[in-house]
Image (cartoon, rainbow, N blue to C red):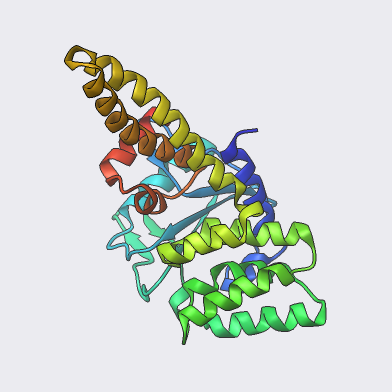
Length: 292
């Protein structure tokens, strides 16, 4: 099973059992993930699942406000043509986004999505609920989403909320539930974390963060080796010393690109890959075509 398949399988479990009720998305029971690479040209949707009623659930994660819905309309139109079944599209807005269009009239059709603005949800209250449930030995699927997305919600003290998230995760008694919480946090809630917080999260949740560690380490190791060999050969005409210098330079660049490719294969959002690697969106989209 590929890393992306494993990640999607875990995320499917994380969002099942009414977990999405916590953010006002009701009546969704996920069954299995659906391929999100659409034909004709490279279009990469965030996440799509087949649901228990036979329709599709399309979930998009947005850190910035969408000015129009044309991009999502194209996604869903192609998906509908390919799958021939109803589609429910939810756009999950992170951080400070508090409004965005939910309808698009193109004359021949009316397109509508459901917007969820996490900035309107009280994150402190969500953590209070999780804390109360953990203390009483009670746990429900909605607690996964509350804990995973708390940092994306409205908070009085984000730094203090992060400490609460870190302290609550180990208190989740069931090991499988802890894994589901961490999976949802890393996949859905990571955009709200600073680089320092992401590094600390990785350190404190080392065992459950193994997938991301492997992605980075594989890329660094493979890129360094391949790039060093390529650069060494290219620079040999200018002498061994220059060859080694060139090999190290190319190896470093290839290592970063290998990391990005591995993250794309794992289904990571472009925004996360941009922050993690420093590569531009154009470069990442070019790498996506290679992955496809």
